[in-house]
Image (spheres, rainbow, N blue to C red):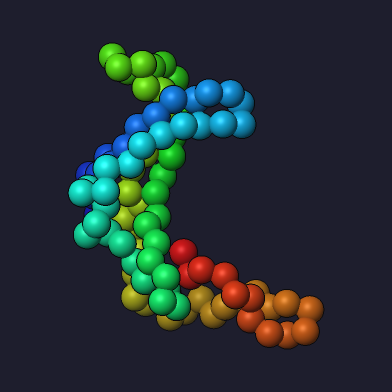
Length: 93
């Protein structure tokens, strides 16, 4: 599996232990948008930095580009079912 360079698409500030405030650059994410059941999504990684950068930003956002290998995806059946034995209505990512 080749390691891809990170695609940074936003940054922000940690306002409290439970609140992060950030901005995302839509121009950088538009080619990574995925569709699922008629809705559009983008997978992102949000990291809290150890120290703020030169602009005072201590949160970085990058696009999650990981995709399972084709053989890996086919070998792992979805075994998650609800109590009535129907599949959950979860996103595939």
